[in-house]
Amino acid sequence: MNKPNAKTHLLEHSKAKVTLYGLYLEKYLNILSRVPSVEKILLFDLMCGEGIYENGEKGSPIIALDKIIEHYAFNNSCPNIAVWFNDLGESKIESGVSKIARVERFKNHINLPQNVEVKFTQEDYASIFPKAINQIESTNRAKGLFFVDPYSYKIIKPEDIKTMLRSGKTEVLLWLPTNFMYRFAESVMNSDFSGSEPLREFLLELFGTTPPDFKSKYDFVEKVANQFKAYLKDLGIFVDAFTLESDSKNVYGLFFFTSNIKGHETMVRARWELDENR
Image (cartoon, rainbow, N blue to C red; front, side, top):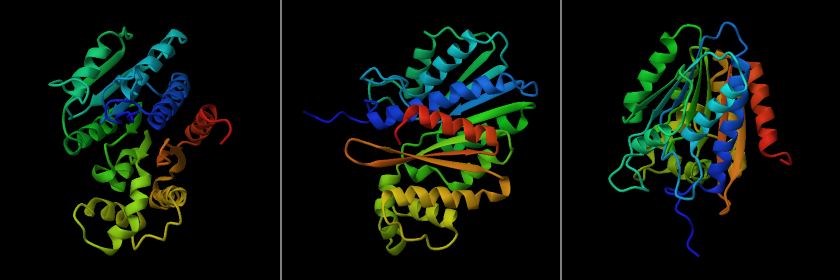
């Protein structure tokens, strides 16, 4: 039996990732809708993918819209919500169709409340990122949540996470293919093979000097999380790490960043809902 293609199917570890995002978003909206000082909630998903996959599983954009609808169904008064979906890529499911066009088409079949604004763009991450930062920093009485799900670690830098958090108004959920990062961590520091630069730069920027020895892929996730705590110390950031394991025993890391102790506690509760045993 052929293994499902991760580009066209939402596999189990990715399903767990977006499920955790949905669980947290559900709690996030419920909490912020009861904070009088918050007049607007901004959600950013700047590498949002296909929307719905060939196996019928919902990706992060549709999960987010579903949670917004559920939230409004049970709350009489809600702040304005602005959602920004972006993806540069072409669909791997529909030939000749962009990923963002698919997401917009799915959204058009969803009846959202009037004070929910959804924006769609098709730009590369480098150009869209500063625009998103400008929006959160220039919006008064707002809170924001970034869901960062890159196609690979190559376009994400630790400085980006710091920039997202610098305003004190945001939280970040970051997905990294830590299994592959761990596999090549030692070799990229000791050789100059083609394509090694992004991982080397990521590790040097985060750790500041030569990274430590990583004993396993789980040790890699733990040490990256601990180093993010040190890297973001001046901003008073709580860092939470969560590992997801695929059927092929690849391990992926989810990292959550917030300056709010309530947000940290809420993510811990969401993690327990996802996996009560571990």
